[in-house]
Image 1 (cartoon, rainbow over the protein chains, first blue to last red):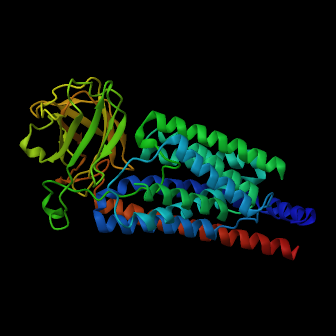
Image 2 (spheres, helix red, strand yellow):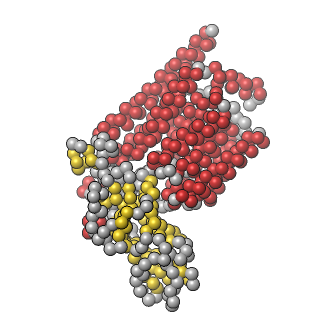
Image 3 (tube, each protein chain N blue to C red):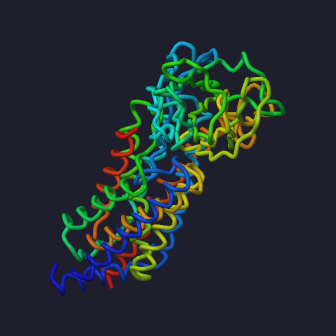
Amino acid sequence: MTAAQAREVDRGASVRPARVDLATLGLSTLGGGMLLARIWLPVLGPPARIAALAGVLLAILAASLIVPAAPGRARIGRGAALAVGLAGVAISLGTGGRPVPAPIVAWALPLTLLAAVAEEALYRRAMYGALERRGAVVAIGVTALAFALVHVPLYGLAAFPVDLGAGLLLSWQRWASGTWSVPAATHAAANLLMTAMR
Amino acid sequence: MRRTLAVGLAVLIAYAALAAWSGWLTPLARGPLLDGLLPVDYRWVSPPQELEAANQQPSSGRFVLPLDEDGVDKQVVFTSDGQITVFVDDGTFGPAKDERAVRLLVEPVDPSGLSPPGGELEVFGNAYELTASLHPSNDRIGALERPIQVLLAYPSTSTLHADAHTLLYSPDGTSWQPLDTTDSPGQQQAEADMPGLGFLIVAGEPERHAEDPSVSAIGGIPPMTVALLVAAGIGLLVGLALLIRSRADRSDGDRDRR
């Protein structure tokens, strides 16, 4: 992207009405609440639980794609941003340790991939886009914090550091590549690895 | 570009350090990312009636831990169904003259044959019995040199659900001692240090639906209400997104006309 194009992109983001960004932040909060509601789903029984979980994730994905988001400015190539993200996942697997075994169900794999894409659409497309006018530090920091906090009720307080670190890296990828598809690919790879190693 | 990559490198280092911190806090937080809510396919020794048809029997585990002059070395063992993981630390089983190994046996047990946990607590899933003997003498091991860290999966069903879970230990299955437990409802697993060999269960206080005490519920909300709330949330989320989109499109139209 040339400097002139970059200025156009920045101008496009800045002319979007503030109330649209505010409403998108409200939508992101509601989406985060829906992610938290996953903890209720076991009371529904096995078939209904799967349907409800898939429904929640698909709704978050759809809503996050429906809201307008200005195109981001790429600071490095997508391949380079993806490579840094995948390296981060691999190194953190080494420092954090191998995930413990768990008796997970066969359809966990598609669900965990759907969760990765839906969460990235919510945090790195909708929420990041709504915060971008406040600066990259705020957009990266707030989306990473929200991402980490939403997982605490499900995975316990001990999960907060690793999910905060992952959130920072994924949000950095959004800033560096200008697109949410790069963090979505990294997140999907991390979830795939976690599922496969169990 | 160099500045962007430098920031990325700094974030990567912070991520690796934070992952190490989580993994150090509990084995339940190990891995590059805790996400996805992977539902558990729990195997019961004695399943509730509604799950009998689909139930598979849980796995036992027989593990041979080599002994040297310092006792056993640090290692992690788990049953093939992944329902119980045992973290054996260096010297958990001490050295023994003329012995070459420790045989650790992990066996799922029907908890109805053991004492109930007491109070409002209910057992979630199977009990597990851990026994150990020396090889080649076959002498039974009665005590541990230090506690072993144990991680147990538990079920969560439409009739058995709790917000918090605790691991309870008993050397003989007659009275239970609560352990300092790390619970991960998203993974349906709980972890604690087991002070000796014997029995282990996961227990919790199921919340009951006021109108039907046999039905579990969260915060007193029955399953049908949970389903309706989820459906309403989905509708609200998509509806709000469509509303934001239409307002944004209208703003763009107004700006273009100007």
